[in-house]
Image: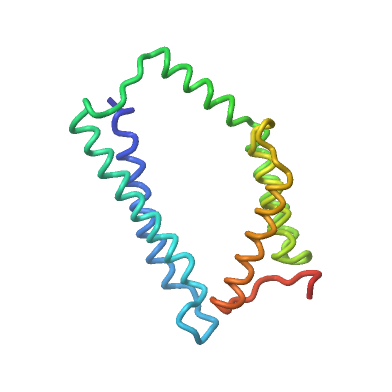
Length: 168
């Protein structure tokens, strides 16, 4: 019975978090004269979480009210799915992600946003990808292009300063 309502609980929790997050953005100090300041991205994220949580909540309520529409797995399939999920999320990837985040935050002031973001994205994709699907060339292209686009957006569109690091 509790398992049946887990999506409802999660969506309500995320709705509350998004509302608190949106309200907290009003305490962010504006450092620019433009309409888009440092509070823009957190507000956008809070609205996105809110909308997605509402969608999850409505779908979960529909599933609870009408259980015939839900996909029913027998016990063997459910256990097999759980085991596959446990195998895919290894302890190494969790520890590696935490280490990468700590390294990223520690090195971003000295090395700079552009270089560190590209390195972080590449290493994170490499770490989380299955061995059979590790495409180094694709990971390099995605990480360099993504960090370049993000840097351009923050510098030219939002007029926010990012750590330049060794690039000056």
